[in-house]
Every structure is written in C-alpha cells, then in structure tokens.
Image (cartoon, rainbow, N blue to C red; front, top):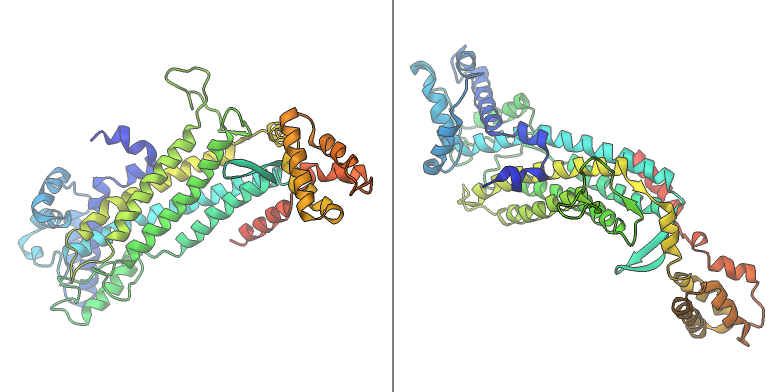
Length: 446
C-alpha cells in the first residue's frame, strides 16, 4: 500500500516518526525490563538480574522485519519479540525473561506507552488553538455577518460568536481527553496472575508506577473500557476539528468570500486551474476526521471480548487506535495553523448581509409591527416587503416604508428612524457579544 501517498499526509509527521516499528519495540522492551525490576525488588528474581538484562538488551537493535514476519504465526507482535529478546540472553537469565506475563500484557502496555506522549502533544496543540481562537474572538466580537440555517441566510450574528463556538467545541473535547487514563496491563495468562497469587497485583501496581502509567482496578484483558474511552474521546476531538474545517470551507467559497485559509507558496493550488485557491487545510482536516470516525466504529464494535481473551476483537483495535491518534494530531496541527493565520474579510460579510436587500430583517420588523397590525398581518406585510425587495433589488427599508405608508393600521405611528433601526442587521445581534465574553471566561477557567 502506498501509505506515504494515501494515508500519511493526513497524519502528524512528527508523530509518525515517533510511533514507528522501532518505537513499538522499545516500548515492549521498556515493559519487560520494568517487569524484571519490579520482580527483583519483590524477591522473585535474583538480585542483579534486571540490570544484567538491561545491559544486554537496552540499546540493542532488534530485527523488526523478523518480528513482523513472526506475527503471522503467533498472531501478535509480542510473541516474536519475546522470542527474539530471550535469544539474546544468557541461559541463566532466560528463565526470568517475560516471567508471569502474557502477550496481551506486553502489547497493551506498549501501546499505552506510545500513546502517552501523543496525548501530551494533543493537549499542547489544543491550547495553541485556544489562544488563536481567543484572539479572533477579541478582534471580531462585534463584526456582523450572516447567520445561516439549512444553508440559507437566516439572521445576523457576529464572526466572534462563530469562533467562540469553535473554541468551546475544541475545549470541551480537550477537557474530556484530559480525563483519559492510560493504564498498565498485567494479568498473566488468563488475567489472574496464575502461579503468583496476590503478588501479581502488587507487581501490576508497581509496574504502573515505574512506567508512568495509570493503575487499573484489575487487569483489563477483556474489559476494554480504556480503549473505548480513548477512542470516543479522539472521535470527539475529530468532530470539533471537522466542524471548524467545514465552516471555514463553506465561508471560503468564491461567491461568499468571508474568510480565506492562510496563504503559503503552492498551498491550495490546482493542477489545471491557476486561478484557484483551494481550502486544502480544511480538506486535510475533514479527511482525517472521516477516517477517525470510521476507526471509532471499529473500536466500539470490538468492545466486547469473549471469555478471557479476545479472538480478533483485540487484534482489530491496534491499527485503528494508533491511526486515530496520528490522524487527530495531524488534523489539530492544521487547525492551529488555520486559526492562527485565518484571513477574515468583514467587508464581504457586510456585502452578504445586504444580499437580500435587507430582507433577512423581516423577523425583527414583524415583531415591531405586531402591536399595530397583529401577529399574522405583521408577518405577512414584512414577508411581502422582503420578497418585493428581493425581486426589485430595492432596499428593504424603502420597500417597507412604502408598504406601511399605504397601510391604514399604521397611519404613521412608527417613527421612520425606529423602522430603519429595525432593518439594520448590525443592531440585531442578540447575545452574540455576551456569548463571546461568556465563552472567554469559561476558556480562561481551564
């Protein structure tokens, strides 16, 4: 598979480099060496054994190609890794290598070790996004623009409040992710530390401390809550990032032109149309998010494992879990650049507010007319004026004034200045500014 062409562009390149085959081997080795140290500390391994193992194995280059080939017969990467590690030990040390552990202990713990720095990187990116979003919120707290529902012009909002919703979405997902625990895995053959009795739980707790992982209540061989929780939290992050990319891509359309992605040499170019400036960052974000959504489906459908060991369910988790992290990190890298350099065009926002000739203000005008005309007539007069304004390309306020001047129920009772004010989108922004301030206060509480 041409992964460098089809898969890797959506991922964090730094994360890819830090999560390769060698990184997995090093994580498995870290587990095995920590296990020997814990067992030595408890007296289950002779003094000095763990250091001898570390001297022989730490820094040694494992044959990753041979390990990969061995997965076909063993079913997981731990089996050929453990064999290769044991082969490099002296006869006296071999018996203490991988003592009391099973393949799932090695793989699950290694994956948690690989994921730990990735979650830290996600948090750093989300804080960076938050700072960029707050700057946009401050700048555009009172910048009016069209609010759109069902893809149609609805009523005015501010660009600041739109960004506030983006920021809150990301921060909600960040706070959820901050509660995710990455537990050590250690249960032995069937999850009850066979042959070691209660000492097995003591080793599990000590292993977690030594590796910097969370302490589980029990071994979680077939209790996949940690994977389910992490996978769905990653999906929430992907959804928050995708929302931003979707909104930005819609607002960058030529006919809309309210925002544009940050410019960069060659960024967004077309292979055949020199005039185009495609929202490529948005495409990469959305492409990554869609893949994460698919991976999440695999993870949540593999949550129930049979008896004491998954038969395919456990195996199905590995790639979707790791790829989801790399994809979300890649997406957030793009979101950070997008928010930091987003080009905002308030003039085009004003232009689009006027696209209906003021007709989008029919709702507040109807509210103004209701005391004089009653609800039904007020709505009818306002809607008819909006349609006339659209057809004749005349200002809505002028059409409305003409209609009301001829209406016996009004008889000049409404001040023309009040009427004009009701037709001004910039004066009908609801709680937009207050929502920005409220969101900023909440974001600052993080």
